[in-house]
Image 1 (tube, one colour):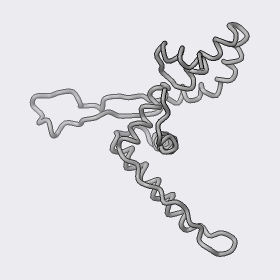
Image 2: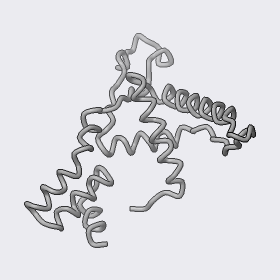
Image 3: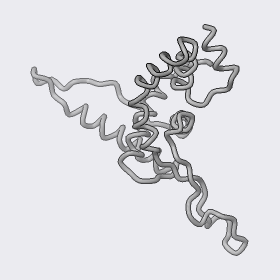
Length: 161
């Protein structure tokens, strides 16, 4: 498994997307992108207004707006870890009477809070797995915890490293 070159950007996007989904209920992709970009703008504005103890304005690297592919990558990571619920919006079924352009399209995303809270117990789970099955089983479980949904060959590749 390769790490992307913009790993830090994806981590920031993941944090921003999770924050938006935590604050709201269910959102479409465009709503998520708008909210993430609004949060970035607000963060940059407040950072520009911060003044240190010498009275000088602190300069901070200007954050760039998140584009659709970056937000989609963050949603994919949340989905791979079973932390995202994806639903069709109500009324999105094909209806020959309603013109195609008037139909709601896309999906609605929300967080699976239960699975996110289960991550707090991963350390305990690893200790139980180690006691029952040994070190190799711990490596396998760690791989699944780290990457989310993985194929068997990917697990073998990571365990052999």
